[in-house]
Length: 218
Ligand code: C5P
Image (cartoon, rainbow, N blue to C red; front, side):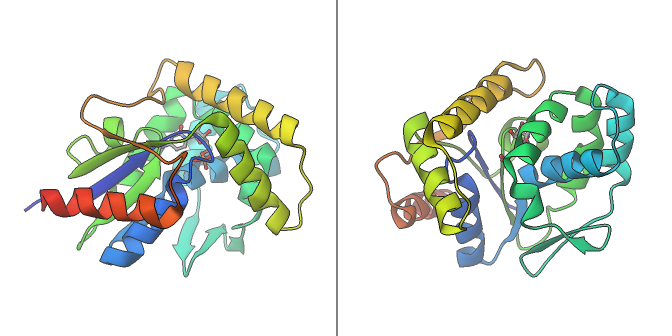
């Protein structure tokens, strides 16, 4: 028996992380935020002043990084970095590093190791297309760039971080473009993934859709 996996891929700020986490909690599956891995590599790269053009060095960092996910916290070499990796700077650098095949390869096995009983819900860009090609349910979750910008803006505001709507929209579009146009594991809906556009959905409606799709299959 294969261990079930639900993959939720999609662009940044689409809400895929929130939805994936809620679904995992509901059906008591493990959860992997694959974007966090790329963000952790980015943070370590910044901390160690590594050369962001040296793909092999970055792959070494990715391969040997000491990462622990525990009790909703993320640890990098023992230090809690749950909030730090959410900085826009980390997201943008993560998307640059993610374009290197060596870095992606260094993270592949690490991601697959999260497939543990009773099952896994994971979100990212290529979870259904590359990391778990045999996933039980594959979803491409998206929302318009404007809606995603509003959501990100509100998220930041809630945390007391000031942000500029035009800058955020610019960043989101830039990241979409880079993630969609890179030659390896580009962001996009694969033929066997179901499209879930959350532009007009509440979080709970999106969650219910994923759960009902999954229940149709199993
Ligand atoms: O999802 P999140 O915004 O945290 O991801 C940060 C960056 O990591 C993305 O912009 C993307 O370039 C990269 N990423 C990826 N493949 C994944 C998850 C994230 O390339 N599976």
